[in-house]
Amino acid sequence: MADMILKRSLLFSLIAIIILALASCSHGLKLNQTQKSQPLSLSPTSAILNYHGGPLLTSSSTINVYLVWYGSFSLNDRTTINDFFNSFDPSKTSFPRQGPPTVSKWWETSRAYKDSAGKTVPTSVRVAKQISDIYSLGKNIKRAQISSFVVNKIEKKVLPLDSNGIYLVLTAKDVIVERFCMGSCGFHDSIVLSTTSKVVVAHVGDPSVQCPGLCAWPYAVPAYGPPGQALVAPNGVGTDGLVINIATILAGSATNPFKNGYYQGDALAPLEEQELILDFLGIWLSIG
Picture 1 (tube, rainbow, N blue to C red):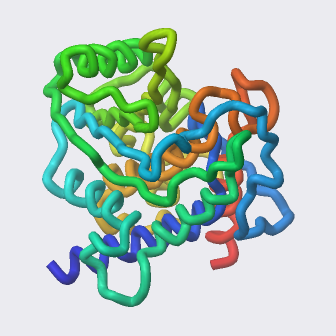
Picture 2 (picture 1 turned 180 degrees about the horizontal axis):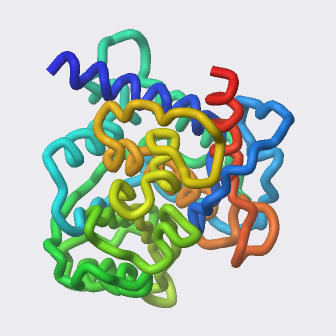
């Protein structure tokens, strides 16, 4: 157990290095591994993202995450990902008491993002509920089906209606999702349920079989990208790739939930700050 805790602690420390203060606006977690020559600043980055006046996930003191495990996941997958979410709250973590977990420190940078009323993104993030589904939609699904799936679960009261929540669908390694590994490692979008309510839905897939070099980097080597050896994935390539992409999608969901929050460029194809995350990784690995 001690070894497992240490491995996850090291993973989450690496995640914090990767995404510290790089809260992304990720309607599609784009694939880009082009390195830039200038160093990146590890400080809140809302100053380089334009605010477009829309709402953020600021209507509650906590962002509730509703996890859907779609397909077959191992106990290691579930434990590691739940430990990641627990690490947002220092009081819940099982890590050695050497100060707050690095993930919670990273998420504190979200307070740099304020809505039009001056309210900040909550520093509290928790898994409010999680459900499992064994391939009810098959193993080859469209993005629209993910949204419809979430709506169905809300309408049937399997999941509650939460306008400040994130409905995160995780798909197993044998599930093919439209555009996953073909331009994105995950996405978030919004669903209009009525004239007065809409919710945020997101997807991240296990990349270990379909595209480890793209969506689990630096734990796998891409066919075209930064040279060098892959880092050892403490919990497995797929699991650790999932965690990194979940972290990035969460940040984008909180700061640009309805396509009119913090981003640069076109709302339909915004400049995604997770590209900077990958650029930073390339620089960091090349000098490390």
